[in-house]
Length: 494
Ligand code: AMP
Ligand code: ZN
Picture 1 (tube, rainbow, N blue to C red):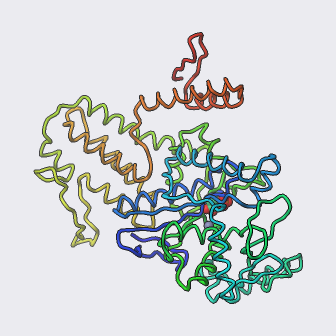
Picture 2 (cartoon, rainbow, N blue to C red):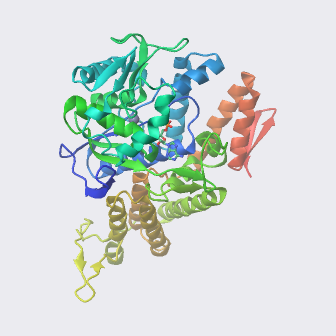
Picture 3 (cartoon, rainbow, N blue to C red):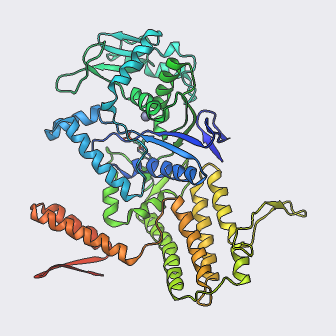
């Protein structure tokens, strides 16, 4: 398995520190509003990496934080007249709901920055004692010039950066020794949450939190994988490396993985342009499995464009897999329970006893090309080949489509039940590694609708008509029409 490592700018063979185990940290969102579909990209991509590593037999410890203290949180809380803690707790709940709806597994641990302040103070003190940090009137800065490795992740020319920062120095940052020095601890301002520290009341800088939470919950000084969106390479991850490596003298993480950005209609998504979409909004029009399918339809290091057309295409593609599974379900319930025929065994690539025949690639002596199996084993090999090559989920989806084509051709009304079941199991298992749920039965959908109706009834009772209307519209978008009758709410499919 190879990953592109931002640190070395090459694809490298993945070797975990402890055989059979993976420690992995993904920078999580700052929780001051509903997450947007850009935030969903690292969540879905790295959840898929985690699922794949687990599939490969690794025991994965996956940690992802919530940044629950930050200028934006404080500002938003003040605007809404609630405390920063109330606001962040609300959005942690909402984020977890969106994650569940996208079939993103909960992390092994989701630490909160505000619960880890002691550890951050200890790290900053350690850096101060070793001469890597200095205090100016209650603000503690990291002394970048003292760190010989600074810049190794972002591969930036530090002199250019310094000259770029020169203007800043004039505008109030004169107390820094170097324009590249960054804040580890900032003094409190009126109306802001604060903690006691050796440098006075205040709060830690953002970069410090991940240094502490990652190693604490992964129980390691050096971790295997550290990941996030590519905007985090500089300064966030560069500054994390600086702190940890200067404090411990050891590497922080062996593999640094970064996803490219998500654009909307070919334009960068940003709040100032007003063109961002929340996961919640998308969920009103689409099953969020469609969003997941769409996110994985491009390689994670390529810019991905979100548009109505592309989402419709993703919906149709996911629908094709689901239709194939549903057809297989019909075959299974209608098929004869007879032993597999010799032909079926051959098509599944299994021996007399029903065991998978191991496969080894050989080269065609004439052309030098690899010889692939002609049977169903082929698709899992294609899938793994794609995923092993820096998590190429786009090609992994293609492997599933090839398997679906095989299913559509090979499984007929004449097939044995066992054959249809084996083919279905293969589609469901490969899709599941991508976090895609493709065996959707009508009963499951019915249950989901009933639950939504109950939610709407509760909202109406609480006189939250906006929410009640939103639920009705959400169901309508999925083709479900609600009718208020004397016997309660009834529903039907459009
Ligand atoms: P933030 O809450 O801004 O710290 O972002 C949380 C995560 O979402 C980080 O890993 C960001 O890099 C990532 N992210 C934010 N916007 C986008 C985007 N438009 N496309 C892809 N990833 C993004
Ligand atoms: Zn981080």
